[in-house]
Image 1 (cartoon, helix red, strand yellow):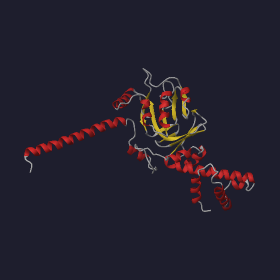
Image 2 (cartoon, one colour):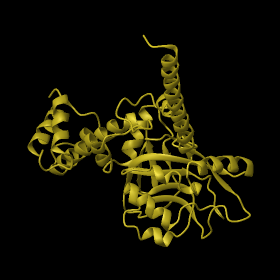
Image 3 (tube, rainbow, N blue to C red):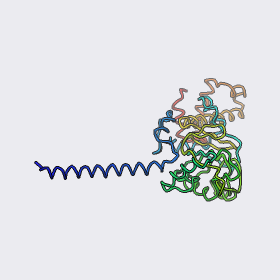
Image 4 (cartoon, one colour):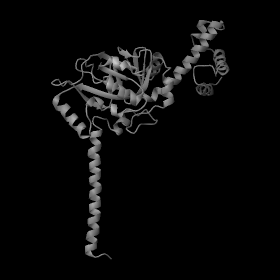
Length: 327
């Protein structure tokens, strides 16, 4: 049985170990919080995206599968809009953009940033917390978080003169991390340099050669990273699927992404079949442009089987579609 001195030493060692452990935890918390400056918590992000049941990033952002993202590139704006409208999401399309690479399609997972007009006290508090975590200019905080397949989506409240937070340096950093462009409700600078980045398909509000927060004119500050934000008339959530084409940007809730893709593929196949049969004179326009009869549906299923290796939809998807049919 240990004597009193041995017992004291043992208790003291345990106490010191506990103290060191608690100190380590405290330091981790102190360090962790600034790194998360302006970011929504994982728990809150999961709470705000309850319809998504699939995989998530470590921070809670929904992660729509890569194969859905790839197939999304062929979806039309109208097809995406129709699925979302029918599901009750009537305000998911943002218009009125200038573009970089207007003939290309932008598809990716949204990483959101919200700027507001700066006021010195709030800006100072936010900036000081960032600096404690080793961060520098606020315009790069979100860029540090980006990964392949992301789209940097920023509400900069349309700021123009002395507003640009992205030029060719930051643009190259974004592209290196994501392989994608941006959706930016504000002014860009160095647009000529940004256009030299081959795949930097982007949507932005305006161009100005100035830069944000010049000396003596504090005019922007970052107030949210991966939080709900507003782009034009759309509420955008982190993890939304961004689809940009034909001058507009569609933000698709993650839980609707697969349905949007599948619906688009089915519509595409039915259109190909219908157009071919019209050219052949087998059916009238009235028959094809209204609800199809059972005979036409059976003809369509047979046509799918006969042309399964020639159609612009993956063979595996057509096979899945045919399994769901009763013809």
